[in-house]
Image 1: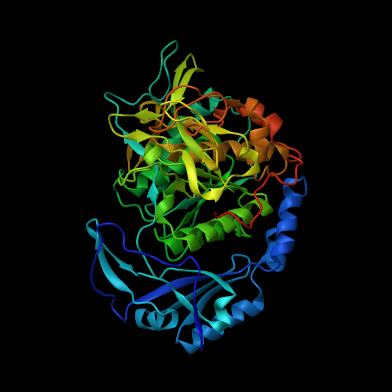
Image 2 (image 1 turned 90 degrees about the vertical axis):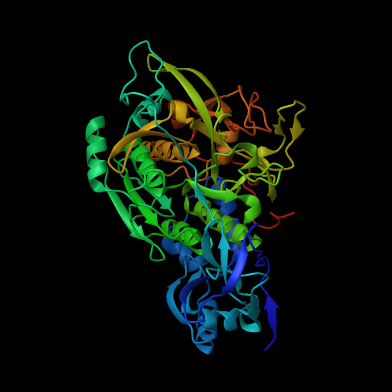
Length: 540
């Protein structure tokens, strides 16, 4: 039977990585096979209708109309049987079949040669080159993820330990250097309400939380502890490490920021392994969760856009398209390494999945507050530690229509028109020096980073959804049409890019004015049918 390379599946070793041998042929693993969308033309039509004021589709109807074709799922099952693999999960809405088997079976099934690879002090199972598919699957499968289990993302938080005791409230007429999240919400004039009736999903690629910490933290704030539920994806679980500098810091920061801002919202934490397959599976599980039905998804993890394969970029972005069709707002941290995104080979890079045009990318600022009022705000850029809000111009995604005519301003001057998707869209307090007082693994501490901005905005959107009685969904086009609902940040830089009036590649449109956003976001989206990027032709 003829075989065909899977478009966009080619992988290379990470810089500095070294093959140390073949992967154990008896090692068992699970691989996620991502299938094409049923009725792509109908989906595109629905997506345009939703952004033109139409109602989002239900998860159940989405699975029936636009999920995987049952015949395609059956074809994957037949393929699995031939190669001794087993289909352990099938989900039409997620368009995913999870196959289980050994390294030897997957090597033969997908014509790969899995290796053990050493990199950066650790070892991962990796591959080089392309995946191939038989004729029976060549036009049905869009991605095969999970053969490689290298970590793909990092949490975007920066921990800061101030001298002396942590202060829980700013003293009157005194600038505070750190704040509980509910105070940051007050500074940004978040509307009243607690987000009751809404569900906020958090995507976590490791670590965990302790209920005792949450109980103590919210008691100290005088806020009712929110309902927090954990969901296991791909065998991930709530597993605190005891290291507040590790992923526990991310998990606790996300929960405590959302819970302090919108304590009435149900917080559902989707735990998954830090792999390409795990990350996407957690996003699609949250998105198509018919039990918890989140209206907002907050993601504080990512990696340089240049490190992802085209099949992954496409699959994640298609998941975010589905979020728009379902009326779910997805907010993603833009990274904490400035305009380089931590890439040491030189040049400017943006972080993914923040660079997807179907998410709300969140950048970072530093705030100055007196008497509970915002008195100054600038780009977060701590030259001493290298921490700075991520931002720049995508090398992959086409320019969305709602960013047409915008410019990025290099630090040296001379604004240039955007040629591709600009990052971020919005921003918020992220500098550890003006960071968030949280509790992690039994201790109070101060954490910053764009990781804090994503859950801050998630809490705000939950409040707006609850007050308006309908999800605001994909809000980017409306935000760009109503920039006066934002606090424009015009001071500072993130390395290669300078803040400027209006949108910039450091802070996007600016930080939120919650009261103005409440009045501008609910109701019908912008009416132009072209103001969400059309699915075809993103990569150019």
